[in-house]
Image (cartoon, rainbow, N blue to C red):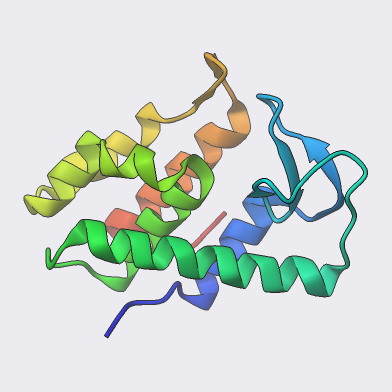
Length: 150
């Protein structure tokens, strides 16, 4: 059975991403809407409702849940670790996790080393962003200690 993101992590993702009902360009110029949704459907002038944002997040999370499930490939994974890996992937893309040392450490059962890898991903466009630093710290706390605090 595939794991799904916990309601506690979904709430954290919503808080970290914030809700924007009109498309905007993120810190690196990517068109974004809702709770951090990006894609070819998002463009200047695009607007959605709060209900649509919720549905889009559900769909996006499902996509990343499946991707993370495939990447962990049978490695022992707690709900908290899964949640943190989904949040990381949702924010950075599944490719970032797939090629990361974080994933390699997780698969090897080196959980403290994996948790320490989150903080290395706090840059956007070559600049350290305080919001990303907070998010990575929160993800690491969930991953290692099960502490769901945004």
